[in-house]
Image (cartoon, rainbow, N blue to C red; front, side, top):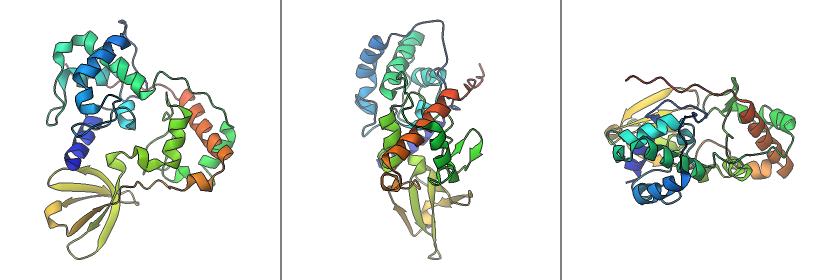
Length: 267
């Protein structure tokens, strides 16, 4: 079941190219109506809070889902995701889909305004210095590429949510960030992030950036660590003020990030 959910989550997250800003529309969404529709049609699988259940993945705090534009999310609602358990809700119509997405944005915290309470300049110095965040993460084209781009990461997130992701990374672990240890047929081990997986194959990205795809039936063992490569000691490595400064840097970076255009669709 967990394997199926992971595959579903990957497909759901890659069904559309992400846009970091919600797209505007000439019609107004009704969040109250969206809440009712979500409760009736979506909560049975995704949970009342959108954080996932036994039959569907988390869509409330998963970063790749949050990053999708409203247009892309509405398309998923109306068309579903072929090959997964996500059905089409085309009968909701354009307005119904818009209302559901508006409610989802509330669950995601995208309507919240986050203020920087720390020293963003000091946070920048920590991010690219002693905290070593930039070894894996990129902001505005600077930094590493092994982990997600954090240029607009903090958009709509509360400070507590950002702090949780920094200090308790496994609490918000995405399937494509989970580290696995593979035992190869010759007895050697290969460790990396499970970027994609189905019933027959698994694709792992190692720390050198390379991608490796294996036939699962030929592997001796697949050990799932339940962790990402994100350090789990930031709550002791950094002081409370330093953590606040890093959070503030991400908030300010997000506020200043240019909006990305929605992807073009072929009709």
